[in-house]
Image (cartoon, rainbow, N blue to C red):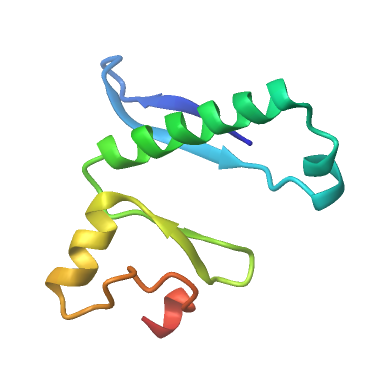
Length: 96
């Protein structure tokens, strides 16, 4: 699950976004109903669209620093810099 909110500058112009993620435990995921599962899929699609629309290279890390996802710009950046086609998914960010 995730939440997002815009960041505004002193003139009231949106200059960024803060996105927070909450990992669901396996038991919580198992208890989701079909409707809830569809809602989670819609939320995940929305989160992907938001990340892909941002002009920055964004890698999503887990608590160990491993890359678990990235937006389209991150994947393009990775490929353009002789990186892995996978965007280093599964690699530790500090090792990249």
